[in-house]
Image 1 (cartoon, rainbow, N blue to C red):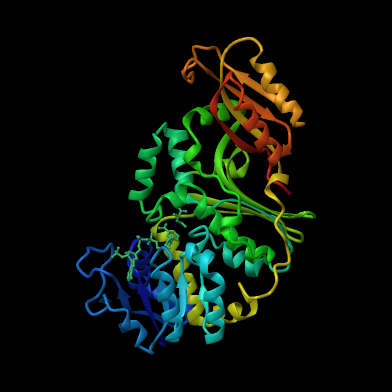
Image 2: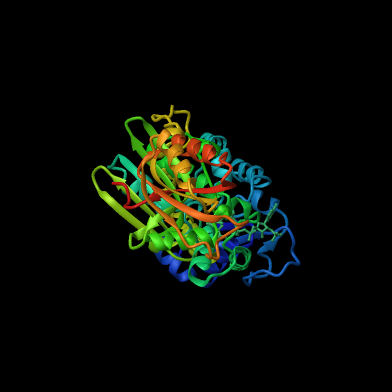
Length: 438
Ligand code: NAP
Ligand code: HSE
């Protein structure tokens, strides 16, 4: 049987999973590729470090040159995180004639145009199914299987670590730090988990999806984003009382005024599909003008789900399918973005707001006056007896659910309410989603 020689650069959580699939299930990959995917080299920084896989003698090396200088290696799974040296190594691999498979969404979201241009100039391809939503084949689905459609909206849970933390806190009453440490132990989190919990990782993935679905060339830093680091048990309890769960939702919606993009902890109605996504799972609802609503669900982080996507890319490159798609799609080319971003302040939503307020006459009137001045209509209000365990500094929580209002008006109203002398200086404000937008 013919052989395609493969290398891995970076043998951490994902790289070790890829090695296991190639070494332990070579028969399976050969059947699907019509050729053997032969692991020729695995490049690490530290040869002495114990790895989560058994690599045959002669394969493990700490010299990248053994890959760059070997013309028989056709495709490389580049599985180191962060921007540098990942960017430089990706360019070196392309220059030396390799096709590259990556799971590094931070690298693509930051340097996509440069890397894809260079790959095209050199007649090579970059495959990145694992970069968004781990084991869910969302890249192939949006860029190929749904290509007859104009995508109208994408709503999803795109960060496994955040979803794992929220689930542990909500279901098990676990503390935030304990849940984050467990996500790290299980290999879900980024080397710097700040990216997971502050919404950066989800925004980077959303920027990639928005590029594929809408042709939008939006740098991830332009996507308004809020992370889960502001979400506490108090808000989870109130959300549940109101019939919702809190999830980190990334969304892209094409409307006549432009493309709306956002990442934010959001109250999702219990019983709707996104509210039921647990642990390290991700889910994505895509609406296309021909297909209607399609829902994807699966493990969005973790060793083997991510390795599954990487190895599928290796097979597609070896078979020759991916290089054709790569040429056709012209990703991150100089084509002008066909859509402009709708200003964040215009985005409409219902809102959950929580203030810590003094429990005395007139407080409610002051707050509702500010909301009224901003044309924000109240849907419901919760204030419990003052003995509630959520009381702080003699102040009690007041939760307001609004009807739909523009983001800018809601932000300004909260800022004004926080100036009132009867209110503590910080508040929580989150969008509310009752049904997936169709
Ligand atoms: P990881 O466990 O930290 O592994 C990264 C590996 O890269 C480490 O083993 C590190 O080596 C190695 N490395 C760094 N610089 C190197 C260099 N110059 N030469 C050779 N090796 C080098 O990270 P991971 O979780 O596998 O993630 C890898 C990539 O996949 C990241 O971009 C991440 O965002 C993405 N991703 C991860 C998941 C997941 O669930 N973990 C899911 C989807 C996508 P040392 O061992 O010497 O430190
Ligand atoms: N840290 C990422 C997550 C890995 O938790 O979703 C998958 O991209």
